Image 1 (cartoon, rainbow, N blue to C red):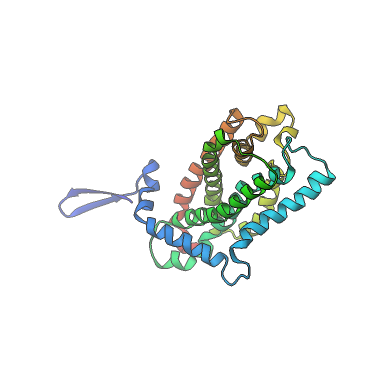
Image 2: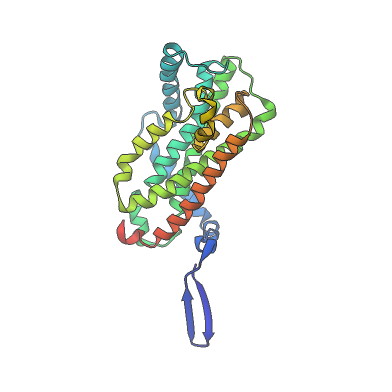
Length: 281
């Protein structure tokens, strides 16, 4: 909210806030019920008039896992760090699916809700945040399937590291929200974002160790590879559940810093562009 300064009894000066105060993040708490409503609405709309409904949250990662198993395990013979490849790939597909679902829906959240933006006031951050958090439902459903697969393949999760799973889920959400804030604000002016999103997610998948182990990357490139925040998420998720690879280290720290930078800069850019949304959308 702008700063209001009373200098004289009948004179009020309204000045824009500066710094991080201009982000007005406290407004999100006042509109928390709207965020919950938007999350519930997005979930219902996602599976409205579908025959299989929420089963799509399971079908998509399972089918992708089967394709990866055929190409990378049976044909290419890619190493899975001694873990059954279906478990190895499906574990990575969980945070990756959360990331891509959140990124795709949140990046289009402003244009798909243009009627709300042009007719009433509310913090526009509500829309991308609700879209990102809505993906947690699909993630939770697929997570149950993972434990069923681990029971079938007799793979025991690393109990001592399970505490880190929520942290890496949070890191995936932070990364998705940060990128989505940039793309959703740009998408208001340039609808090219909608065409570029499939390419962006596909390219990002290939540079993230979802279908393969990050150990195949040469040591001299590991620091560069860590600049991809989702590489830290996937590696950390595998470590927390399967004990694959090393725990939180310098590479994960680099990925975390990159995610936070993307989020903070995304927030600043989104807030700066927010005043023009209603006029250009």
